[in-house]
Length: 519
Image (cartoon, rainbow, N blue to C red; front, side):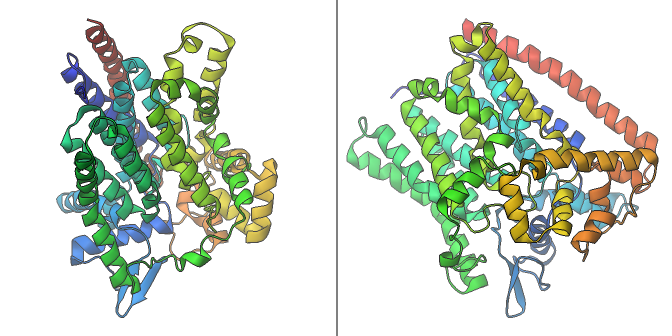
């Protein structure tokens, strides 16, 4: 097989620099809208495990938080430990900053730093989308365009400021697929090993990722079936399984210690987790006003419509993407908690967003997009719509609308109206929440703010919590906490200037790399 470089010569160094600049640009842009606090009880639980690992050198706590299960004197989180491990460096940075600057609140500083995890994770995913696009043969300009659509043109933009683990799952699954693609195209064993390691980390972050493992194996075997001897195919399979095995062993050991069985998780019996009527789940995940993926990621409609162009380019990879999307949708369609209340859209489907967006590159390279025509203009409008509909959830904590619904409806009533009535969709009502918050702030009479969300009822969260009742961005929070306005304003302006300069250099770098690739 012909060898393929992850970064193609002669533009290798310039593409690496472009990737680095793209990462910094996306990270900096996310910093402009970052909340600076842990978003949910799920995120808080994972944060407490990180704290326990660093401070107590153990993966369990002595206090029982939401989502924790007690085993003797030890309390174990029901969630995967992947996010807690990833957050350790940021926790240590926060701890160091509070040591250097004693006047800062240590706990808030550590929480602030850990809250930046998904900023870097999502920015890194944008880079993987870019590199995947380049190696699929797309132009550098279109590959950058795809990465920006991934980062800002769908609800990934919102989850970059969240504390859920689903953004990390999206990165590791995509990175696993990308490095596997590099291996089957170039016979470099290190990419096969890295693919297994990435997939293993996805598993310890969220165990449900294991449903995609058969697809990864099938892609590996079918890609090399005609060119490799059976002995080599078996060797490749052993390498992949060996790379993943330490992660499987660690999660089985954790399950045994926490829940008494390697096959038991903190979510209870598998028999009781998948009772949702299949068609109801499918409708809810795809087309319902409150959760339908095509409403939160409108560019996915374009991808489906023009998928044939991508399939012609690489039919086996196209099938892998299609089956990945189907497996995820079918799995969560049966899941009891498929709605994931207190989220923006169906957060469970975030890992498949990249597999809708990467095929768009084939459309951007086609005559349909290169000519001036109504279809091109419509697609551009849909892309910008994908960005626009995320704005209210970026500005105001989307949990505010969830608490608003909790005040008015029971869970059963809430499910019914959100499934069928567009009037109650978060895509509509979050604008109302945003308007109320901004109006109160402009009038100078925000709600009775509290610095703590601990032990609040839904009504109190809606009415009193600081995170719900002002623009949910870190410098706004710091302003209300008494930080100097001049310092905060100058920091934001400085960051915007840096991003503007960086955007200019990214444009220059795109032109340079494109010119080198043409030579």
